[in-house]
Length: 278
Image (cartoon, rainbow, N blue to C red; front, side, top):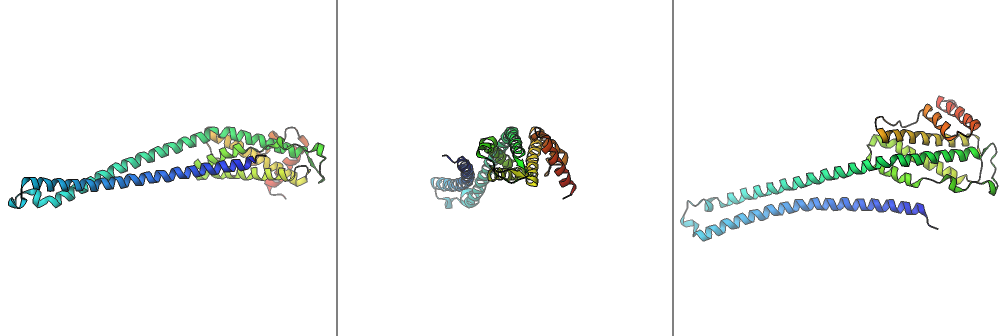
């Protein structure tokens, strides 16, 4: 059987390695441009000095004409030519580096725009996962911690984890500003917790507060994803680090719309938790 999680992680590692190789190659190219420019300046100065020497040789013995400026000032002329050549080389290299920086900024902005463009699809898939996970908990929550018969145990396909959405979130984290990363990282952390709970408790009933806490985390995932959906589409408002009680309550109505009694139980638990009542 193919371990798709391993394949996914390997794919991410390969992409990171390729990105590192490209950055290293670009750095070598920029350093090569500087070395080439410096070498060009040295060669130009040598060429000027050689031209002066050849001209003096063809013109005869320069000592016979003391007023010959090439003879008396050839060192100064060679130095000035070398400085001008080096300055021109540095200017050309600076222009090339500036152009490369602009292209890199443009490429990074294009990648950021692409990550933001596909973010709504990834976040919508995460919202669906939160709804399926909450429905799973609501369907099999009980006051007793007993194992379910094999015939009643839900199949894992019913709560498939959205790995592709994680890849999109990873790319989004790479390109958004530092202040915008916290909600995305919290969202990924909540997804990891829910996935672990569903996998470890598959075939068992969810009990009391454990069930309510699990569904509350699903509601936070849904609320965070909804807020990030608005951000990725309009980017007109900041995404709060922690969803407010109104957003969580609204999310509970969306993910538990078929389970009125259990939804009310979780709503009461949410109000107690947000009000600081244990």
